[in-house]
Image (tube, rainbow, N blue to C red; front, side, top):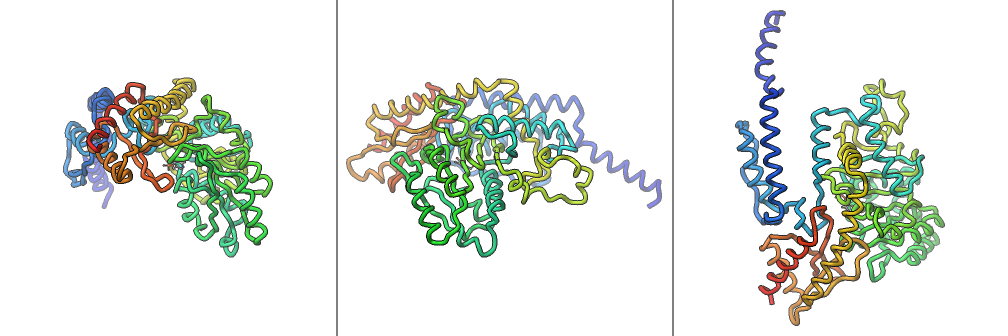
Length: 475
Ligand SMILES: *Cc1c(COP(=O)(O)O)cnc(C)c1O
């Protein structure tokens, strides 16, 4: 290929590829179409059914071109109208989602400008925003400035990062693994056991510590179990407390667990993925002792109402946190002079990553913290209100919840187990509001999780009315 051939070929390719840089007119039009659609979505949320039990189809990629109109209509039919509308205020199942607009726009900004946030040298501003979000989390949870942290895609990955640091500090490897002990409760989120497996600790001994009537870990039982394990020549190294269990919203006695962890020199991890930000409410005393943990995780994509894809992890022992994550390659040498903690990649399995800090930094700068804490306080009262309304209809309720998750079932005179399952099926068939179920103490129950920033008193009234209609069908 001589120079002229090369130039001709480049011209041809340029004509074909320049379509990727959409012109200003078209950009404006597309942005308008998308925001018109999202405005319609938000405006219609109150009336749209929250759950549709339907499979998706027609989504395969076949190299055929589609207009924005066609894509939006496909999206509506095959994504929005299948399954759960996660950011609906009528979503009371699992852990309801966020999706605040300020965060969505911040994501748009982050995506268009696409700064490299993993390494400080590449974009000091973006890396600093990531770090400032971590600094804010340290303040919220009373962690010292000397601690480190990073933002991950979710609580599961945050647990993984924290457990890896615990493993590396205590050098849990090779022959010592089967003698090493981790302390949890049955209420722990399954991402804890999953993280242990992923990081090579499948064969550790796992002790499930008994819980009280409110599903909180019993610290005396923990102490006794650790003592027994030490006497038996085992190697206790990690205890996991939960600040807001997924099933029941229980907050373990964090301060009492900290005492035990300190006494026996265990790594103390607190999983605050769902519940952590309730520390900003009148419930803050429940979180006393969280500042004594060695690591904490929290999910802004749950209790800060951010769209999916943002969790934080804080770790006090820097060296433990860097051990597995700060290996650098030759191609990174221009960045090597920077201090380690300034580069988010040194604390995370990820190198190149979405500039995810902006989606929390921006809403906090725009709204301040107050509307968030007010919204969380509102959720605490809404779950009380929900329980009062259900009790008035004759439902049996779980214990007074620590946070915003509770559960109920109807005391049918016969076949109660089967009939509560039927009630759940009717609720899903109706679909106006969404609930999920779980098994508590061997019994089928329906959960109420109030966490959507869009759930209001009227939403609860509407949900109760629907439950009442569904109950009449089963009775
Ligand atoms: C949701 C949750 C997790 C997992 O977080 P993801 O963001 O879903 O990965 C871990 N622990 C608790 C207590 C949770 O509620």
